[in-house]
Length: 204
Image 1 (tube, rainbow, N blue to C red):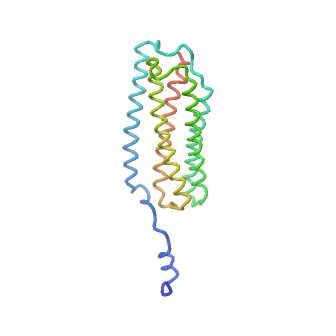
Image 2 (image 1 turned 180 degrees about the vertical axis):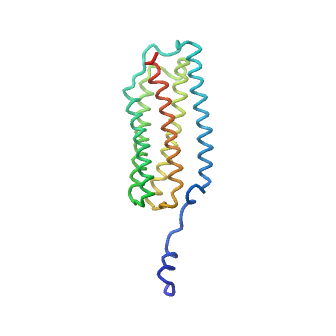
Image 3 (image 1 turned 135 degrees about the horizontal axis):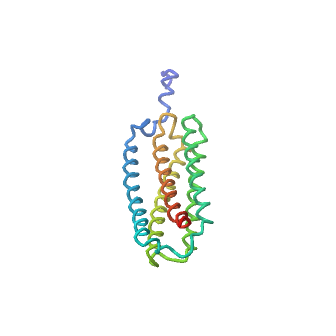
């Protein structure tokens, strides 16, 4: 490298960029297709729940109203995780070296906390999946959502590691945006699930 200029030497030693800049990444189309298909799944499941409720005039619901002592804090935790992801992603655009891994890492930890609390929520239920129609709806819908949260946490962990390794910069951070879109989608789905199972019974 003795014969190279300082500018040429910087180009030679600079690490190769990771991913496509902006929305040129094929992952954009993949995540949009995934969200459309998975959103359709939850729409069908929730539609079946509300259809059954309407058809039975709500008589398939448990006699006791749901306890929100665990689900309400769990909802707040998931919302905070979305804020953390957004904050970390914004850090990349501002050329911050530490904000992306911190924000994404916090979101991953909060996602794990959500899963742990949800497991306790399941364990405390007085019914099991095969108890009745309501129980089948509850465990099926929340179970599908938990599976999506697990996948989202794995994605966040991968993004956390890549952020620590310096794979992203202010021009090439499409994987972070794509992963954050999926995580926000998971959070929005939970809001509908929370409203369905924990709020509507109190509305009569």
